[in-house]
Image (cartoon, rainbow, N blue to C red; front, side, top):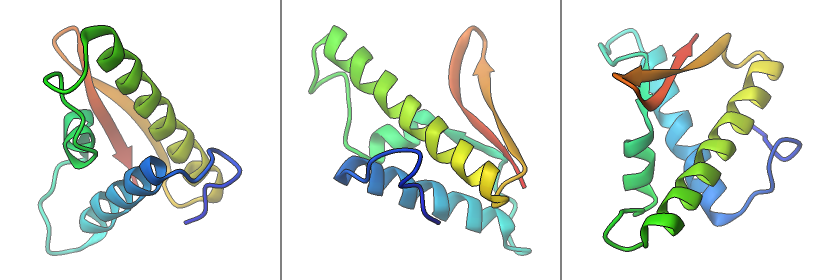
Length: 102
């Protein structure tokens, strides 16, 4: 799935795109009972982003950028017809991930 029109393919974006593709394809499998939700924390872990490594402000900026990339990728895939839609989901007041509609 191409996303070059949505976001530049940096190493980080390639990892995010791969992670999202794996999660979506596992969901498409008839043999899975995976959740519709993809957690941001799962993507941060894949990218080895943690509060231990980054200062508070740097961590917030980094995670904001990652979430922006995720939304740009999903918007592009929605436009291409790969997914129907997506929406952010919350755990209490905290936005914790995206729900993918296939």
